[in-house]
Length: 387
Image (cartoon, rainbow, N blue to C red; front, side, top):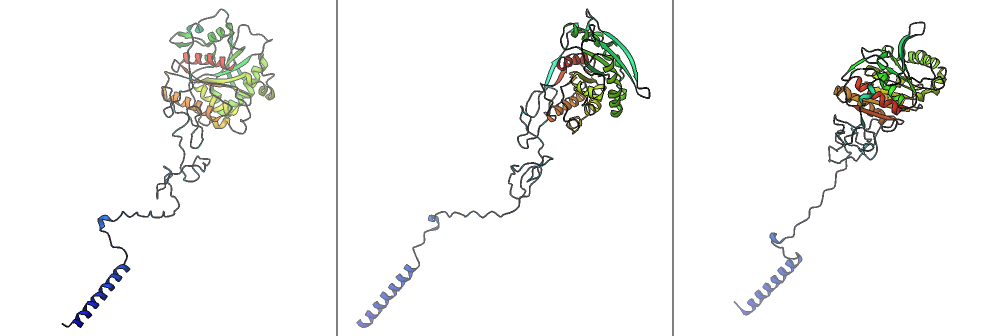
């Protein structure tokens, strides 16, 4: 090979090297091994917009699991306006009994131990029992008599009246009208002997003792037959048109002459109640239909009118003050009966604004069963609270 040829080959090689270097430089920096590469951050995918489809039982969106906070409020049936969930008051404040979610007043669910099994609040019960001396004859005994009232047509009413030993026309008396239970009679509340563990007792013994000891304002007792009150319309008529005018015209009371206007004016001094079936008729007839003339109620050992709280808040009743409402049950009574009665009491106290437990309302827990020991004790305490 000639010297000239060698020079040409070297020149070509140099040109090739220059070209290759230029091409490599144009491709960027050298690649690192995979093991030395930095971790790459994955970009979060954008959320797909959608309208929440809520499960009305849980308040959760079935598409994304979003939890509704119910902040938009609730309708009249306590359903969330956004997700449709219905607040069932699974939690509530022990002091106010208000649900923290929807604000509805909750009726505590008390067990037989008197403790709410949701929030732990203690039941509004007040244990009561009378000393045995109240069932014994007293030094001064009141007067009892029985009579049958008639309107001259079809309405008749058996009554039994107790008057205090010092009854005077110069004094005005509070009136307590009381109905008996199944199989009873009007005089059960006055001088009819009733069998108990203490022997045969008469309600009048308790009244006599209370008058002797001046424990409350003067009162008289009128026991009545409950038969007419099984039909609320008939019971209302008998009370308004037959019984109360008779009491007003024959005794010195706050009821004037017995006209509708005078009865309304004296309603703070009139109480109506009863035991067992008589208590049920008080709830079903007198409370909802006669609130304009009766201002005090005492219901012992029974009640089954779940609508009474709404009836007391009706347009025609809302304007009448309830001066006192006393209920009771025997701690040895049938548990289902006692539970229903306590439920009615709690419903009235929580839903009727002018009835407040511990102020003008009380539920008594008596150390007895469905018997006259429970009912005499209940009435004794009721008289102290009412008058």
